[in-house]
Image (cartoon, rainbow, N blue to C red; front, side, top):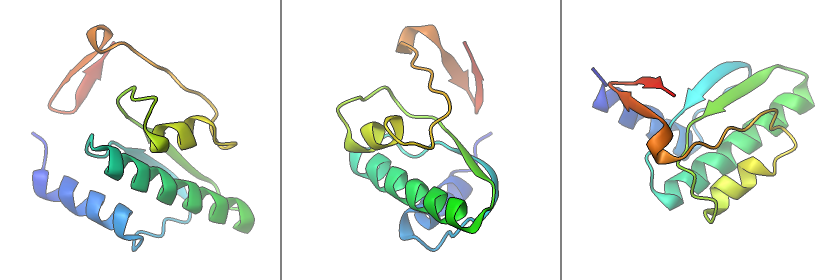
Length: 102
């Protein structure tokens, strides 16, 4: 079962810029609100730039709606850090309690 308190805390930390991840791999699935998606994208890109500058390995798997008109989606999709992107129609995937399938 999802932990709403934990999810809220992680989103709050990511958006507040207090979460200064320096290395590792992380899944990011922010609330589907355009301003939050954009803020999360901007912060992740700053973290990736800092990791590249310091020579550390940092990666994100980001789950977003296919809202291509949102500036955060555009920033991530055009980022030099992107290695792969998969855009699925809403009818072609689903999830239940954080378990996804395609």
